[in-house]
Length: 263
Image (cartoon, rainbow, N blue to C red; front, side):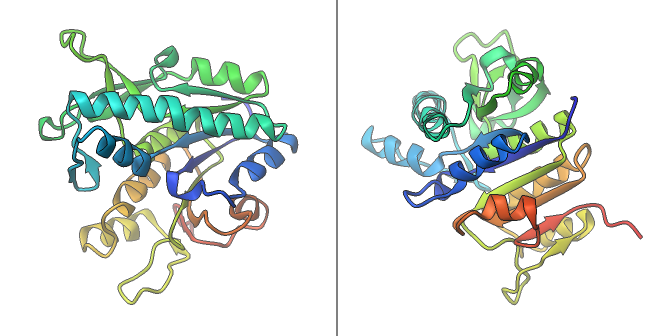
């Protein structure tokens, strides 16, 4: 894709009332940078499921998704969360369009593991729609649900996909300049709890295999490793800090950077 694109993954946790992420996105867009935003919304999904009397179950950080759960996931991610982010960007003078992976068949998925239900892995990314929006000067804001590529299962046409993995696959497909995860922790820490500012892909694999990196950090690291097939650098930073995104792009040096280390 022409020009360098920055893929930004924002979690529900980083979008608080005092959050500056949207301001940073608008500032970067006005500087002429091309941005793609992928968002999650796990906490809100859990709240909405509770309202419906549906309990949440997780296997290795991924939500087990039956049909009633899937309906709530789609409604919250592609509806509520997506439109709130788009509204926030547009009302601050930015230009954003909200989509899900289903729109334009951007993300095509297959069932990952029967045990997880309607949870997908990415089979294909079609960047046609994203490219048109970027060329027209918009920030595509993508909700992580995918078109189910199995035509024989007519009951379900949409799959829930982990937002971190979607961000990694999107960055790899675009050949992004960088992938930045805004999280609610300082970055990746070692066993003693000390922040690790720089990791090679091999070192990141060891942290996962040893269990030092666990829970929600695992899909983020996996996503960084996926992204590195087409992206030069990936960053996991603390999105709760004021102007964390702008600071990382302009100065760098916060959180953990995972990249191929040369020399």
